Amino acid sequence: MSELTWAALALLPVAAGCGWWLARRQLGRGERRQRSDLSSNYFRGLNYLLNEQPDKAIEVFLRLAEINTETVETHLALGNLFRRRGETDKAIRFHRHIMSRPQLSEQHRTQALLELGEDYMRAGLLDRAEKLYSELAEQGRFSETAVRNLLAIYQQEKDWPRAIVQARTLARVTGESSDALIAQFHCELAEAAREDGDRDTAISQLASARGYVRDCARAALIEARLAFDEGRFDDAIRADRAACERDPELIALVLDRLIETHRRRDRVDELRAWLAQLSERTPIIAPLLGLARLDVERDPGRVIEILLERLEQRPSVRGLQYLVDLLNQHGHRLDAIEPDLLTRLMDRLMQGQPRFRCEQCGFSGSTWHWQCPSCRQWETTRPVSGVLGE
Image (cartoon, rainbow, N blue to C red; front, side, top):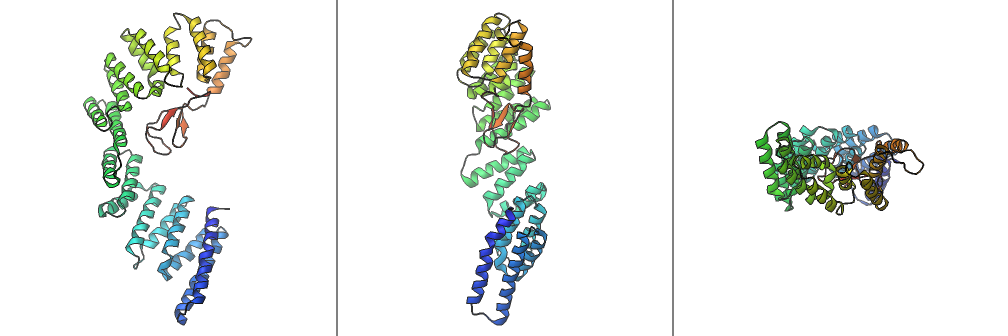
């Protein structure tokens, strides 16, 4: 049964109550006839909804809005139902019609404006939604809702300067901290500046990010990338390791760069000790794979033993894949199964497997997102751990 059908069933008691109320009231003949028409039209509209004829139901309910102002709440609810069904054009029609009512109360007008803004956002008409919510915010009506929606719009448009302004406003309105969110916006601006070759702006934005979150891990990673690009490998090492100390699972993102920078600075032994320590603090296998890559040329047999021991404790397809590659490269066999066959099997197992997943909504993929594309939350992406993960 569809959502609108359930809504129609939920409204049946309303229509029935309306009829009972009409029978009990001592009204004049003309008003009683008007109420009777109202009840009858409600039943007609509900019947259309039950029979999956929303367009006809819309016409009936829109006519009802011209008869009695008491139907406004019902119309708002019906408009919301259409929006949830993805029929934003119908939702917009409902809510705009309500706003056109000359005798509409200020409370209902504001409520209809908020719902219309939601309709515009769902329809992708962000410019209209932005204008509407900006007016509400300036007037101080439902300012928290308006500001939250403006913040969502600017994040969707990647308009980070305006997003920063709205995040600050939201903190003032709600009394809740927006520091972590604002730090992410400054990191986005730093990333854009770095890609454009504007080093000074990137550094300035990183300083701003740290002004909100002092030990911001993402800011450290961007700083490391800047240092690496400029050949300042000691600075890159310091920044990358600082980020991983804050969040050990970030090693999955920077392992290649860490290995290269430590080799360039002849600090491999130091990296080896640090990776061994880090591997005890995180369930993912990336630190151990880093150790294996550092030692495989010197003592492949020992590396294989360590990997086997670790995989017995924490099974991981990615770790097993690396182990099979080692066995294949060094002429070993895994029982009676040919290493190249196992390699192909592991490749097939890993094909299409997500590497990262949002802890908030479960969105997964092969790319790390600082802001989840699905739920729009920040810093909720984590490496997938377990048998099919890191």
